[in-house]
Image (cartoon, rainbow, N blue to C red; front, side, top):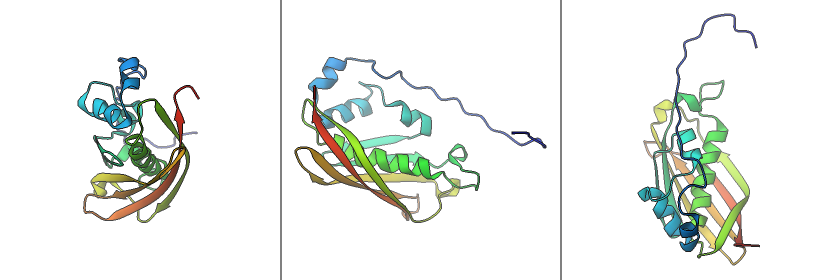
Length: 171
């Protein structure tokens, strides 16, 4: 791609903890909510995606998670709004972590699908984004969760549903 004119630029440095650090045996002794609490307290490092996107908080209770992130210019697509992939990542994080919060010791999960509905554009003027994920139904092998993303004014900007597959360690 050839640049024909000088553009104003910004920069950003991202630092994250390398995954797999810490006491993994201890991690596997905790249930899902305990794992999320250990991440929030700093006992375990947060996943790198939180630093990559600039997520600022993750609060969990059983079956419910709230993730926050300020909308930033580095999230933008070419049209000057927050990229749909960033919004989808927030929704996926909240929905999947809500399922994570229900895991028993020795259970793991993975996302099977994510269906997103974009309701309004998101820009830096949207301020602090808050995404709440809740479990709708939790079975032995699958869980259905939803997530709602709101801007700082409390307006709903996107919604998603997600199915997660639940597995036992070693399966």
